Length: 335
Image (cartoon, rainbow, N blue to C red; front, side, top):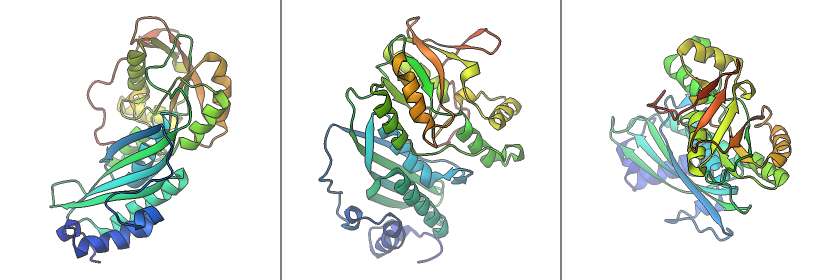
């Protein structure tokens, strides 16, 4: 193969076959994908099923703690898991810019393969398009995931109830601040790394331990504050959280202070919000803390029966602050 992608690599002809065989099949190898049919034949799924799709345009492509490749797997795996499902299969589609280094594409594919193995999912079908220089920025990836729902009723943003406990599985803001630091070469953020991780196994353990979970959500774009607002609106409840209880790494606090950012609105790619009956909170926390992805899990608040859609924060000095939805974009193309 040449050192860089040419347009004919997306033509569907011999060059396309070489790219698929020498890059994607080599990294994603499994019997379902290797059939190279127009669709993957999935004979072992049992309903109900959860399905999610997402597109990834993050820049830079590689950052401390991950890459666009690992992120494209983790993000979709986590979205499927938030419905109380075990992710099983992924599709992936690549939009590639003419002239892209094949070494870069190989590295992205290797990261995707490693992330899929860690999450216990298979990439079983996909597509590749190559567009002229300038028509996209190096690599865009779409992944779609499908999994088997194993709990009933399935968690939903509509299911929060007054009196429920609000848990977070770990410290906030690492991913958003990492992307900013990498993009702008901010030397004072060298101690910050993305939290990008697959949460599906931890989520299964939480549901098994707690027995009943009302809401699971991953606070990605818009962060914790925006996601809690979405849940409060969907469920018609208020949510009260306590600043003192919210875990944020010291390096993130310092970086946000310097840059004028609020970690409650920064993106996360390896954290989940869990809302469930008060009586089940300690069991869920113990299950989170037993996972390497939930060691810093904390109870941060309670669902109330105040004004529907309102999210309020009790500050460290005892005051009250209303948390609204994120307005505008703190940082575009973070995932």
